[in-house]
Length: 339
Image 1 (cartoon, rainbow, N blue to C red):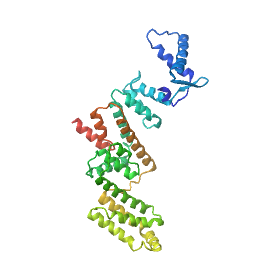
Image 2: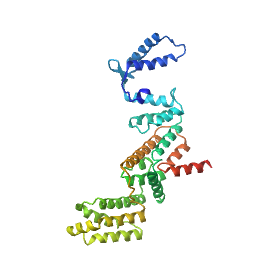
Image 3: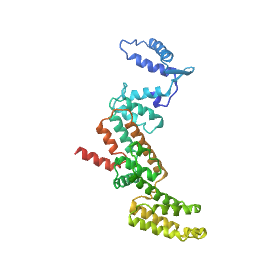
Image 4: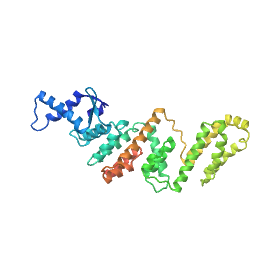
């Protein structure tokens, strides 16, 4: 465990022998003579290498586990069922959750835990804490939740939140799929309309004049959807502003230079008013990276939750129900349960 924590995949023979000495010293009726312990540790180390194949001497006096999986397994075991296992040890393990090299350790730890409730709840707390102190990102989660509540579909709320979370950040839908979101025709229409509107907004924000036909095409396509009358009227008016100019590239370029920004803001306003999408969150690079990190951490938490582990029905439900929710909402739900 210690070598893995330090990132020491290769360690000196003396270090391995010292760990063995500490183990032998604590055995019943162990010989406490230091010289005898040293000799015994050398024999044990050579026996582990020759008979069990767990350790391999890579160079003179330099050892490593024969396969990384062994190193990961024994690290996970020490945290959850070893002599150092405790609530404090689990807290220590969770502090490494964001490190990619710890991924397999966590999957192993969850799987070998007699009851993974405590570890998974600590992981959930760690994930929620990533965005806890950023007010703007908490507001983003509030929007994600409100948007998901506005959709009447027969899916887990967390799966719908995952869809809207990824929609605005151009992420994959893998978290939604991990939560068993199988798209029906009705939800596919919601998805397709949202994607199409965001596509038009993206084109208008970074419009290459070689793509102005795409802008007209996507708007025309959206108007074939079963839209609210007011949204359809707003989009129709926006399309009409393009129609008499789209055939003349020179005229269109001149018009867009003078009116493109205002046209784009009209589109954004209509999207926000009638569909509650298209908000300009004005996130910094650091905030975007943090949201991606948060999203990936939630995906990993769901992967651990769905792995071959024992977790109580209550804890599984609690974690799934509060995925991707703002801190205030999570606390409110906890208070309702406690009362």
